[in-house]
Amino acid sequence: LARELEAAGVPLLGTPTASIHRAEDRGQFGALLDSLDLQAPAWGVAHSEDEALEIAGRLGYPVLSRPSYVLGGRAMAISHGPDELRGFLAPAFAASATVLIDRFLGDALEVDVDALFDGTTCRIMGVMEHLEEAGVHSGDSTCSLPPHTLSAAVIARLEDITGRIARALEVRGPINLQFALQGESIHVLEVNPRASRTLPFVAKATGVAWARVATRVMLGDRLETMDLPTVAGGLWAVKAPVFPFARFPGSRPVLGPEMRSTGEAMGIGPSFAEAHVRALLGTGVALPATGATALWLAPAGADADLRAALEALGVTVVDGPREGQAEGPGNGAAAAAEGLRTGRFTWVVAPASVGQADGWDALRRLATDRRVPWFTHRGGVRALIAALEVTRTRTGWTLTALQDTQRSAVEV
Image (cartoon, rainbow, N blue to C red):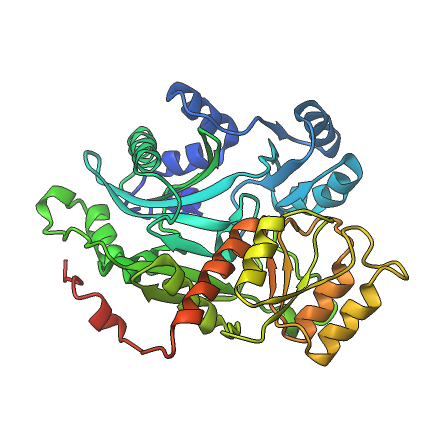
């Protein structure tokens, strides 16, 4: 779109069109990361289905396939083998002439960074840590600002990388970067030289009208000339997504790299756990202090620490069918389904589920139809446990206007 507008003689403010292309074209972007000595998942660019299969075989499964120049993760998918990949390639090539094949990073933590760059100065607007593992679209993830587990040293590294990339791309205005953290390694997943959907959340969380600041930068103002406040600490903000699965009978309510959510709720509090409670309540998730029952879906003996933590909080944990057996007879699937229909279960908890051929599709769909929340990914389950610890000690909740919460909000 930017190229067509520029070709038509329309003046464009902000980041140059060539820089947008460098960020979207994987060949150019890969060369940029190499020049900065930055890591990214192993990748290849395919121009046909056969080439995509060849690249995936060389990289090793699982792989992430994604077209270029798309929003919302359109036609992106994670494949665990060639047959699965074949099914995803047709819509991917329908969306783009080339499809990027990435080696998928399992058990990685994903982080979003929103920043501004004016040609000289880089200002970090917010660093957001996802609860779900890498592979879930950022718009579908629950995230916290500030990060709730990252060290100051890791955050400093992320901010440094952000500034280096913004300078190399000659950004003028907002930029969004997505990272995957695996051990001590930081991988750059994606760079969007524009405002991201997280910008309104960051503005509310910090009390700064960042969209107005970004507009001034795009018009040529320098960040150093603006009287921007130092964002005070002491408050946490959590964004929780809202999904439309219940409105689409028969759909598969699974999270992945293609965005599914249609809304979000935000909670603010003096701790990560309290902010998360408020966000969950905003999405309609029940968090009873007593009397909760969880349907537990996990391999025998797996994640025993998470199960024990739930039970220590008074949650009754009921074993469901094991992974890969949910659809078969005589394995507990019928009892689990009946419990969902009768309202026995407060939540479904599946710590290791990534929604890929886990055998729980029928239960997942039934839980959605019965409005029973489904907690997946270990990070999400740990956050649920922390939220329950808060609800056990709180007897009531007060409502505070956002304007009163963010006294540091200023006109810029």
